[in-house]
Structure formats: C-alpha cells, structure tokens
Image (cartoon, rainbow, N blue to C red; front, side, top):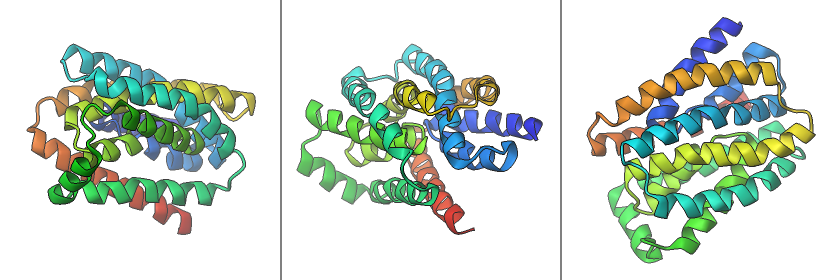
Length: 247
C-alpha cells in the first residue's frame, strides 16, 4: 500500500509542480491506503505540501514567473488565517468540509473558463494592483485551506484567474501559498495530534521529485493552453471531491 501511495504522490507532485493543484487528491488516497481518518489525512497532506511548494516556488522564481506584487499580499493573508481555519476544521464533519471545498473550487473555475465573464468580474473590481483585494483573497484561501487540508493553489488559482491575473503568475502564487498555509495550519493540526509524520515524510520526498518535472512541463507549454488546462483540472477536482462524499 505504501508503494502505491508513493507512486501516486510522485504523480500528484508533477501536477502540483505544473499547476499548484493536485495536493487535495492526496487526501482520499491517504484515507484509502494508509488507514488515516479524514481529519488526519487532511492534516498530514497539508504538512507535506510545504516542502514541494518550497521547491516549486524556487523554480518559478528562477524562471521569472513569480510576481511578488500579487503573491506577497495573498501570502500575508493566508498566514494570518490558516491557523484559524485549521482550528475551525476540527469541529466540522468530513462530509461538510468536502462539500464546501468542492463548491468553492468549482464555481470560480467555471466562471474563469469563460473569457467574457472573467473580463466583467475583473473590470468591475478594478483588481490590478488592488492590494486590499489580494489580501482578502489570501485571508479567504488560508482559512478554507487550513480548514480542509487543501493546498493553496486549488482555491487561489481559480480566484486569481477570474480576477484577470496572468496564468503563470497565479500558479506561482499557488506554489508559495502551499508553503505558507501548510506552515500556519500545521501548527494547529500538530497541537491536535492529527499529523502522521512518517507518512508526511514519504509524501514530501515523492512529491518533491514530481514537482521538479511539473515545473519544467508548464514552462514549455503555450500560456492559453496552460490556463484552460488548469481551469478544467480545477473543475474536475472539485467535482471529484463532491462525488466522494456520496460514494
């Protein structure tokens, strides 16, 4: 079972390195393959995101794909709220958390898939350079991800795309969000005894290997294809999470 989990973590690491998504897929795998309950799986996955996210952030920065005017306010907000989200998550049922996460992922992803809707939203909010708006995005993303164990990109990416920010810069923001939310949320999860550190170490090593390949892949693809691809992946992931509740 651990061998299957390791291979899956490598594959998810490739997705994460390319899109800042994929980490949330670890949660059902952990439940099925490791015997952890849902809260333990969420906490263990969240902790493991820190290491792969740190490596992916380095490679995005090295390739000039990080825009810190976007990233910094989002990360500051997430650091503040990730701990609170993890505390709140301990009081909700697994099904409630998963359905909430699914809705939060799918709705903005569907909107961002249609250019006209994205343009209208971005224009009405006047988002370019709007530090307060980006800080609010970070607060929201940090709380939800801390509560559900999801990596930051799975929620931040569709929100940033719908606000009209560039795809690569949005993916780069999702990478470092994985680090900040994992750090903040894991402090609370550690105090509750939810983190399985041996399994988290296995996940971290395998996902780091995949992340290296994922970063190289996304920088070799046309940007319009990247945006459509990550949007469809967000929608598919959100629907997958919702279906799991009833299966």
